[in-house]
Amino acid sequence: MRSPSISSRNNSPRRAGFTLIEILIALSIMTAVMLLGVYLGLDALHASYSRSERDTLVSLLTQARSRSMANIDESAWGVCVSGSEYVVFEGSACDEGAATSESTPLGPGASVSGIPQATPVIFTAVSGTATPAAITVTQQGRTSAVSINYEGAIIW
Image 1 (cartoon, rainbow, N blue to C red):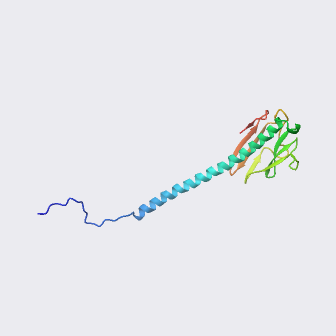
Image 2: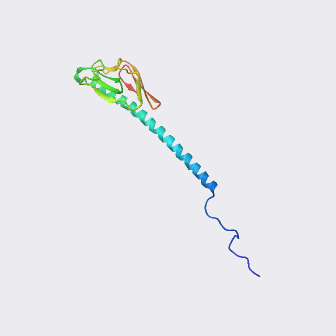
Image 3: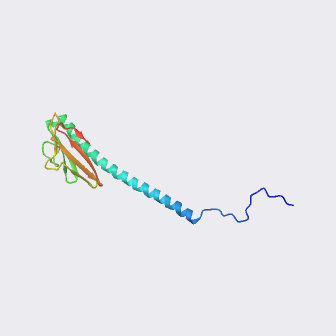
């Protein structure tokens, strides 16, 4: 008599590898994860552009307020939007061609409401006070609000 074999051999041939269904499922899961990553990455990029535009405006407003409080040229300083650029200017009127005005371009696709050229934000000399304003920055479908109170404080 023959003793039973200790190894567990199977008489059917053994196949190595994955089936077509397993490969397709793995590819569809990887594709879904990559698409989600691209969507979230683009959303973060658009949010970054919007924050950057708001920060540019706040920086320019702060610059104008600092200049007026430092009484540079013994004059008020202000900010307006002229065409597709911000203008930091000296005096009581937005004059982008003046020797003391500085222009900064708006970001691509950005729009600003609340500080048109006719009624710019002006900070008075020495005190830095301003007429209250509510400014809205819109870029890539996202909006940010910046407000200025009567004391000239910039709130964003």
